[in-house]
Amino acid sequence: MNHPDRLRHAIGERGTTPLIGVFDMFSASLAAQHYDGMFISGFGFAASHYGLPDIGFIAWPDIVHFVQRLRLAFPRQHLLVDIDDGYVDPETACHVVQHLEAAGASGVILEDQARPRRCGHVDGKRVLPLDQYLEKLGMVLDARRDLVVVARTDATEEAEILRRAQALAATDADVVLVDGVRSVEWIRKVRDVIGDKPLLFNQIAGGKSPRLSLTELADLGVDVAIYSTPCLFAAHSAIDDALTRLKHADGRLPEHTARSVGVAESQALLERNISRHHAVPSLPPQLPSPPEPVGVG
Image 1 (cartoon, rainbow, N blue to C red):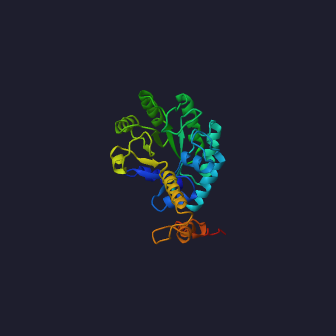
Image 2 (image 1 turned 90 degrees about the horizontal axis):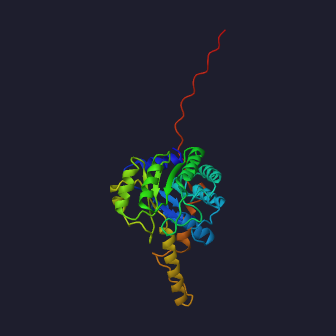
Image 3 (image 1 turned 180 degrees about the horizontal axis):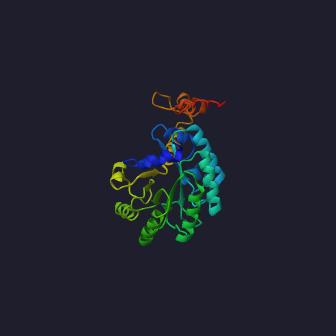
């Protein structure tokens, strides 16, 4: 089974499939110890790669190169990639999708925002006219081979949310996402209007959406949950705290204990990512060769 089909199969299973947002190779190394799937978050990538907010600074070759590194280090993980608005132009969106599929991505999320874009959980978002987005989405769907495509709307007006969700569900997109959905009631409304199409829910700390467990999401009919920034925000808190304590200790490092991380622990984590340490996937059994034809004469 290829990477997109493996993700498609996971989405189709009972329950809600979690995908954990990672922002660099180190956060991905830690996430891989706990979950089978990763979400390459635009928020996290813009923060880690550029030190900038998620308002449209990402250059598509950078995200493709990141996915290449991820796939080499994590050959079995689901990799769902946030490609924002496809980097504005529909032709560019198609080009990026083909590069990502060749790099080993499992799927992409394509949003309907207009520039300047925003994080899906902040105010001030604007969306493209629906027909323009559907044209771009249709081109992306035609450009992929097997890649899972999540169609995302950032509409905020209630009637427009339902109109767009229904329109996205009628396409050949694999999954629908309404970002910034504000309540359980609205998850139910979206679930009803998209019919049998798989539904994705985005959770981000401090965002507009309710905090829900995977069990609660499964009961609401949510098929996939992306956690955009748990690694980034945890790193923010932990690094700030560690440096504050180092400053207060006059630069003396804390004592290394069995429960802390030092050179050996970090080295052991990273060595698992070396490709030669990955198990060679088993090949399907070969059928016996047919007998040689018997010549006549």
